[in-house]
Length: 109
Length: 115
Image 1 (cartoon, each protein chain N blue to C red):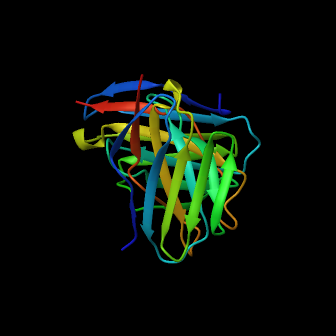
Image 2: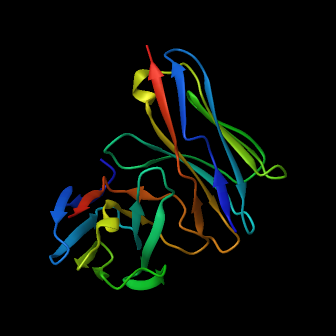
């Protein structure tokens, strides 16, 4: 079966750095997405990786290793507004999105 | 503001009621989706419409009935639901489905409670 694993919950301190991991086992691979979802709000697109390596976008970076079936989302200079759930999703060989259950990130002052 | 609007935001219904969820997108996209989001579970894709035609139905029970009158509007008609159907129902849109959905634009969801 197809599976996406990510931690259920993480806690970090304001101003610090946090890394949210995502491992996947899917039938083929056509890219990996990260979405952010604040409580009671719509998920919003953060990043898309299809090639190995690090993609940086401001305070957020996303890394992909296709050989290891692994990605992470790196958040720097954490702010209270970064408290949210972070969803990892992989597009398989049929271009279907396989979703993880999400990681709830709690930022403490 | 994501360009995708869902109504109502909250809905409580009995198992014998009939209600509908509405989604409208203002992005000029051609594909629209219904997802079910339950606590601590992955998003579950329910239906996909591309250019108003249903292209996917992921074995969704018939008590959920989608309708897509045009590329901008999507409905989910609900009848004789079960308590386990209580969840957040998310609508999303994308430019198309060829080569995958690409970036999805989600609405804020309709929180459904079935008593």
